[in-house]
Image (cartoon, rainbow, N blue to C red; front, side):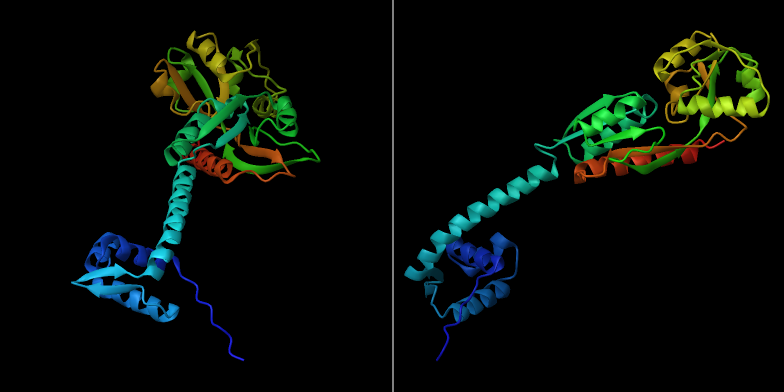
Length: 310
């Protein structure tokens, strides 16, 4: 018993046949598809042989479709529309159309680094939408477990059965003072020099404040916190009034001397390295768009850490 062979058309063959139908010639089809005329001819010959059908008659240099070809062409038009719709949807997706990335960050990373990464993501996906929240560290758990966003940029990690932490970047602390402050005359400062000044914004319960307070304790240094303030923008405003000196992370102050010429950023001689993290729920995979944002943020922070190491 002979089995009837079934022939499937490739998208390329459909494209070539449609171009010949529309243009009415091999020459016209080759121009439409920007390929050589022999290539069009070979494809058409192979197609007719495979189908066992005459698709065109040659009349006066024109390719006139047969009845069979006209029936196939009607189906091709539908396929072409679907392909154009698909390509449009892909192009929209490539621009981030109808995509929303929702994230949160602790203030130290949010001040400078988060906006830079957002700009990088928008350059890649111009139509993407973003929702960015600034959280205290203790608010991160609710943000993730209640499904308010995809991930949180954190200044330290903790143990939680439903939250996964991934390394984001390494950072270090710096001292910030007013340009008229005596410390501004130095190229770098020690913990002992910092401890002799009125301090602004250092909280021993904060991950960064804890690093400095441990250094003070290890060296037996007494220090006085004159003004307590939690967020870096407020701390910098107080330093601009020359009310004392502050110790902040390198990410918050990156490019600060350009933005605020009355402030001086000084490396600290002691080791003050810390790690930043991405926190996310371990039962949900984040989107490729969120992952792209994280990759951009990681690159931005790595560049800062490399350029500003003491």
